[in-house]
Amino acid sequence: MVTLDYPVADVSFKTKSASFLEDWRETGMDARRVHYRNGYKHKLLGGWMPFSAASVHVNREERCRMYVNAYDTGVLEDMSFYLQSGGKTVPSEKA
Image (cartoon, rainbow, N blue to C red):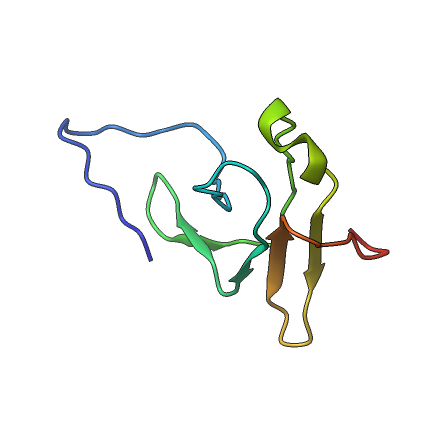
């Protein structure tokens, strides 16, 4: 869980929730994978809202052009979902 504390009172951000899978070598050469489950977002007026959907955006930069299609996403049996990218990753039929 991540909670951000902003140094100004009563600040709210009107953006979507986001997550990313970083490649610190910036080449796409190494495969990386993350699993998500039981995610919630705190609503402005209080209370929590569960994540119920996800979308994927692939950065298409020149330095990793050889790996631009090396990504996969999906839902697992435990109802978690995953994102994998880089290396020899191949999109599944559902990705």
